Length: 311
Ligand code: FAQ
Image (cartoon, rainbow, N blue to C red; front, side, top):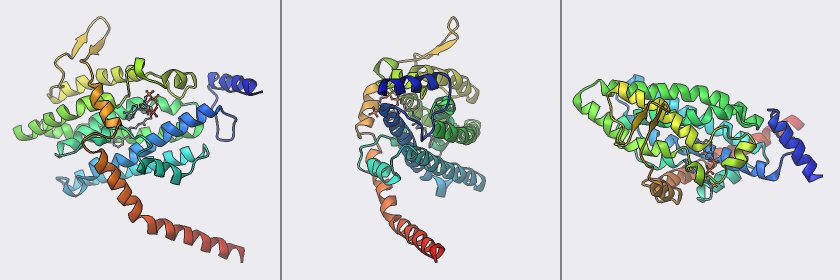
């Protein structure tokens, strides 16, 4: 009977039908989605920290408003994604517990520091640019709640990317010192942005199964290549140099070829040894502890309302 259910499930996926929370699904599909969606949610929440670092120091009121809106959007994305994960039968407390204990992963990119204002531009341009490249195909993910959440998230990410690029443009066209800051930020964020797409295809443990389940539509290397192809001309327009001496356009394939990625750095970050891993988890633990009274108050308020409604 299990085999028949599996067969029917795969037929539905192949026919591009959306799988909904109450539908039968293989246990591995459920587990993979919980892993990916919660990792994604944690990334959004931890991703608020590097940029949040600059909210009080944004150079103008207009920049501050845009940055505040962006960081708030990221909080919102985290919340939709936790809700999407909850439809698969896990609780938010459990997921947050996995983040705080170090059991759950979040994107490697958020373990790098943001020492200058140009980092805010580089994050918007490159990190949101990479996020969009990876996430637009997720709008067609076979799991309905995740796919629907991604539609709105991608629209907001697109605004984030433009705000970052415009910020980089202002710096690149500014004083020599501003242009130097922009170049320095590009030098630090370029390779980590390429790592965001995950291990190369021959090392990617989950890709084949995730593609068969139509959770993933393109492989890690395919999306990484698309990102490089889209981003190199943008760097040229800014008058900045991508920090890769091996980068060159191949007229025959129509793609940019690029140098080797330092996977040792990526693996160290995944093991918790990046420049900011400890600081990020510490900040989330503190936020969780400081927010205890809000959760308690919300539960007490809900109980009172329920009691009043029963009278
Ligand atoms: N960092 O076999 P695969 C954002 C892990 S965007 C850390 O290839 P899969 C927006 C992977 O989980 C960032 N870990 O896995 C924003 C797996 O670990 P496990 C978040 C990584 O799932 C912008 C192992 O390596 N976006 O937040 C990374 O098929 C600006 C083997 O990898 C998403 O999460 C990494 N970079 O493909 C916010 C998108 N890459 O569990 C603020 C949704 C891989 O076996 C500011 N996720 N790993 O121990 C996905 O599309 C996929 O999960 C991939 C990985 C593509 C990330």
